Image 1 (cartoon, rainbow, N blue to C red):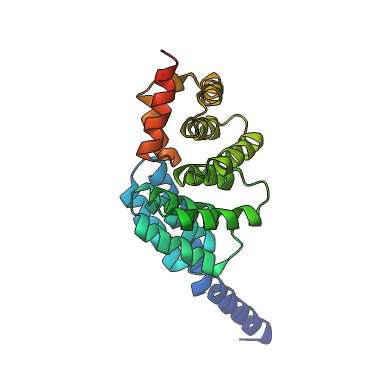
Image 2: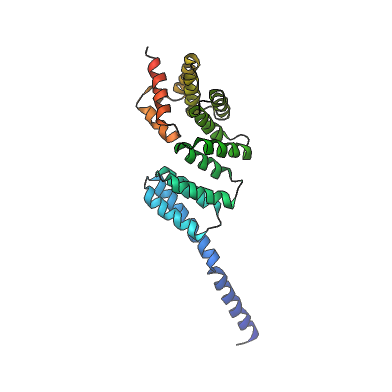
Length: 230
């Protein structure tokens, strides 16, 4: 074997070793598992989605985005205790990751841990000044805390940033309603109906649970809707 053949053989060996290095294989596999998990989630198969996304996390433990996607999927599956732990891992890896803070704040909100929800969403709002998700959820949290002035202020911020989303309008409506201001409550709720006629249906309002509303807040929204008929 002449010198050129030896060089070619060494180059080929190096190239094959590079292609098959564990880090590259894991990165590719992690991406595949993430895409697979997202596909399962879009189909509503949350257990399969969690299994695939867990594999993505295991293969790429330094990727904070994988933890956010897994944590949010666990939240959708009702596994909020596990979701909080997963999202904290994302924040540990990348403290300034807005998506992780937003998701963790929502998990705390639906668990009724209002102080933690408020603190986390305030941090998310600090990380991103125009954070309509944080402001909307702060409105819901402060409404539950009966801090109606703050709830109304944050709802208005969210509405300004996302005027085509009816959820902040309903949050504004229930805050005015709980603050004994039915006129403003009905005005805000009517604006939500103008954006989406489905809000005329009391049954449809049960969907608000998926948007972070508590059962009591949904009941208040239904009271406002009923008031239009009186």
